[in-house]
Length: 130
Image 1 (tube, rainbow, N blue to C red):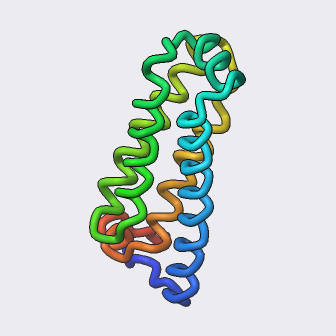
Image 2 (tube, rainbow, N blue to C red; image 1 turned 120 degrees about the vertical axis):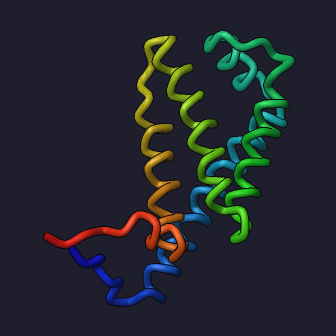
């Protein structure tokens, strides 16, 4: 079976970059909300079963994963770290009976973006034709 060759690698690259920008912007905003420690954020963390003293640490972890994901040389490691981070978010929401669709979609988008912008990953995990 032959790997499907991208018809326009530049379009894939720029689509991946645009999606990456949106993902990193979302994660940066989320981390900023944690750093702000506004009342709504602290109430939500309490509802989810977390103590207030971990909110900043979770924000730092989120921002660090996003930065690692943004740097081309470490992007695949960043995707792996974000998978773990978002997996924890999914587990938290499942534990309290909330919808976990947001972090699940986020995880899929993280890998779609890195797949589009990273030819090394496309060679490692090629799409195959019948």
